[in-house]
Length: 471
Image (cartoon, rainbow, N blue to C red):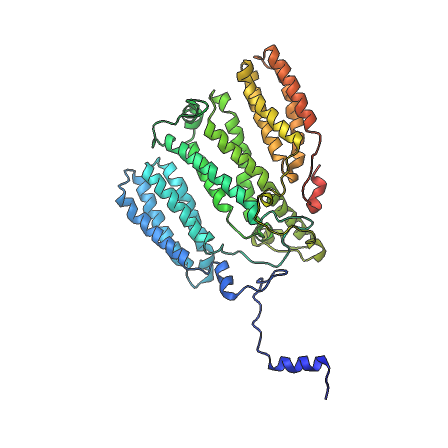
């Protein structure tokens, strides 16, 4: 009788219970199989959030009459939105997969409209609060609480190839989410003034500056309250911070791309608009400055995830994977050597983990200080326009560039300050309004900005193939 291990293994296998097939995509390296029930919930299988949205739909439809909204357009909007929320929530629990996929996304778009609706119709305080809160909850219950429809759990590395940390981990997203909430609360308060829910908005440092900015011709040029637009943008950024799992840099590239577009380009534009306040209005706004600072920090904290997503798409394309499909459906890298997870920091919940990828080189911190000084110098030195306007704008841009360069992956952007510093040096000679002290101030400050933009500073982490772009 044979007694080798193979024979025993074959004999045992004949009496072993059949193994349940592994669900496609349910495993990733080094982790156990996801139970079927949990897998269903991760892919939109939970029912209670959609039931909650049905309740919110009914709340909107009945509330339009109960609150006595005097604006016909807003009442019709709430009635229509409530009916859509109810219907789409009902379709989200349908047994047909096509409905379970697109209905939650469609419902989230209704939620986004509810964030805009009270601004479009210049709603009263009660209607503004109601629509904003309900719109936010509709998005949460449509795609966040039950799990995002279409998100696949694909096997693959925790961190991008050659990176020493995961830029999509929850600790990495935590400060972005918190800063978005700060920006929302500040913008909401300013929106209340523009919608005349409150009659005054005194500024702690600039007196009537905030009121002057919010009632200026620049603000009134928008068809809806511009502070309300900021509130909507911050709320969407807040919600998008929760979307996807910690592997979304490769499982949901489209989400990372849209999040990056919302934070980085729009963030730079909003910061520039705030910097133009003393030029266009002749006043500063403290809540605007705090919200802009929060947005600027968010930019430097978001860059690494956007770069990781872009690098993944490049590598996937080199492997022959279809770019468009990978962008929308996500994927992984087939080349095991490109996945190198050796030396990757484990995901930990700590203050240090929230800022991996951002360092504080002394030269960039001093550049930020010089930019802030240039923004204040015209008031201190008595510089007149247009030289004063140049200092206001250039100072804000120098702060913006230096702050973005605090991110390791954005370090090369500091060279933009070489050009800005050169203009600061020569602007007093080309623009009227600069007295002798201002000429010397700009010459020294501009020269220092140029010199401080040369050293690269410390790079705290590893970034694989992208390191050649970190100069």
